[in-house]
Amino acid sequence: MNKKSNKLFEDISKTYADQQVQNNPEIAKLLLDCGESLQNGDRQQLVCTRLSNGIASYLLGHQFKAPKSVLKLYSQIEKSASTYRGAMSSSIWLNEL
Image 1 (cartoon, rainbow, N blue to C red):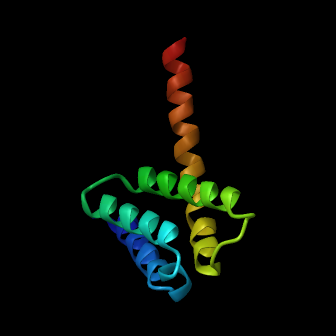
Image 2 (cartoon, one colour):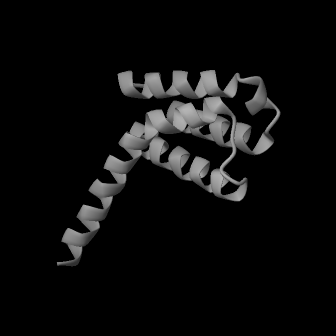
């Protein structure tokens, strides 16, 4: 893993270790799956986007309530996820021309 992937993995691990997250199987599984994706070589930006989408879906289904560590992780990854979404949508638009 590269430096950014290692940092993301560390952030996911720290969040996963939170007791409130451990008591929430839905969030714990999301974090575990994303951590495994990084270890399996998936790109950091793709994992950020997947994780961001998963957290956003969770928040929508749970009245915008989540453990503080999850919200902190979300704020850390959202910029990278937004950049990746923008780059992918731009390439799709350009291919349609």
